[in-house]
Image (tube, rainbow, N blue to C red):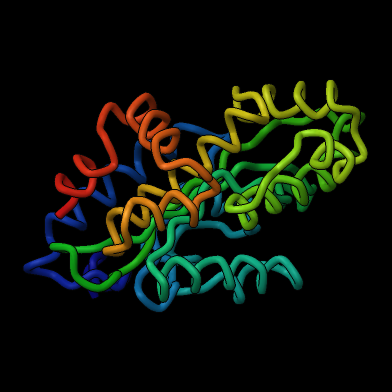
Length: 250
């Protein structure tokens, strides 16, 4: 069996995909604080860097290929990661800036920022996903508050259409507003307000690409209560008006 077949990648039409995936894999093999992976439509690994292999306690990549996170990670981590994969694969929704607990080498827990995006060919159905998880390298004496901060981040990412107050988010994290802002800047290089704006603009981009909703509906869905303010912030962030962005995405 060829290496392509071992990875679940078909020869022929997918040869270019295979070359690109293996090149990315070799590149991320050189970055020990980043986990890199590619999965097929069934959420099975077709590529991973050496960091992920080592963190799963495996000897080589062949021991990981073809498996899902349910085969490799303990409960409840495995189930949580699998739910994320299904969200990306079945709904085509990217997972962005997720603050979560991972297992480092020797099974030690550590905080990471994870991003996963769907893989498509010619704008057709999702054929897989690609993702990375970046270690935060949080000192042990600072790690305690990160679980609460993760809850606040998830709240922003699921309630961005609603009014969000920094004071409430800080309280949710058991932090002062100052501590909350400092931690956000350390992790995301953004203030809390900038992170909220980023989340809303990304949600608007997804809707402009994937729906035919009006600009007013899109603005309301993404937490903007003034269409003109939405248009101004969207253009200042992307360089395009919402209408121009939609036209370029068609």
